[in-house]
Image 1: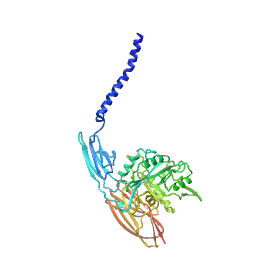
Image 2: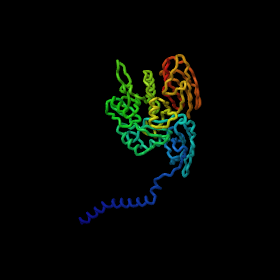
Image 3: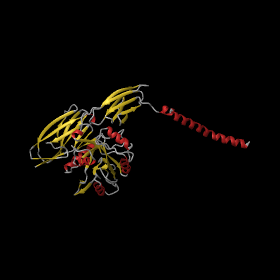
Image 4: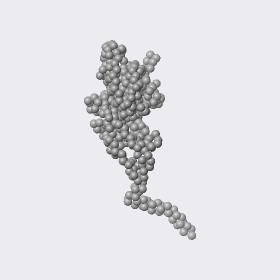
Length: 440
């Protein structure tokens, strides 16, 4: 009797194993016939076809303001499966192409199609300007997306160049990936960089470097090592607090009782992500540094960690290459010379007597200097400011439409620097780097 009970007990223990085996074999057979795929994969009910082949697609629920879904097209076609309902589909490609939007209603067992040829309204490459983003992260440090997704998003935004800037040791995996995968084309290129994340002097980007910069070194050696590796040093988000970037610890030296900025700096990230009070304060302090005689260039970057919530190139930095071909060395040279404007929409052409941002104009005292302004935008414009030595020198608050041309002249009175700032709808704006005036 005891033996029989033991056998029954063992049999009961085997029952779950038998059931699991039967289920496994059944599911395997179903998978082989394709029935599982049919049950779990959702067929597209909206197909978006776009020319050019890369673009961003933002999907809004009909009665909602926030984005319901964001995707990036990388091969000209994007199949989507959306719940039934009404949607507003917005298709964009940076600030040179006319945004397109269309309302669709998704119904059961219907496939909607959107075919779009985005209009290239302003070809900045033909004018010698190339757009990029010099601060971004992937899963190789603290970013959310894999490297190919970052590249896909950058191309969808119409960028010409990006500089990847993983934190510290994260650069090794990033560089290994780039050595295995060549993303470069004549009009889109990826360059090496590193966000040197120190615990004593904030964060700075080493752009276009050819080796690893050790964040554990003293600040002076970090700067020297960056330049040794042919990199440019940029102070990142200077007003983000003592851990991320604080001007009290950034490249300062105390001399005769007052603070002096580290002269070996190359640039300042005056615009990090969406415009906010930190960026405004950084811009004001950048003006202060220019007034002290420094000729640092100013950058706009996204610092993107998630391309779906913070797409690369929003804002972006345009560099002027003129007739030269896009390359890492040419981009670095343009950055170093401050041949730059920054934007989240408006596209700028600004010169003083033919001299453009980053250049110096020599004139006689009281000689007339002429400011030539040309603005194009896919968004409506509202106002422009000419800034002289940190203060508003000229203002026009009557801009309307999506384009503006203006010429104004004034007599030169002293050594100065000037830059142009333009504001538009929905918080869009653009800022040039300075043009310097030397009065004899």
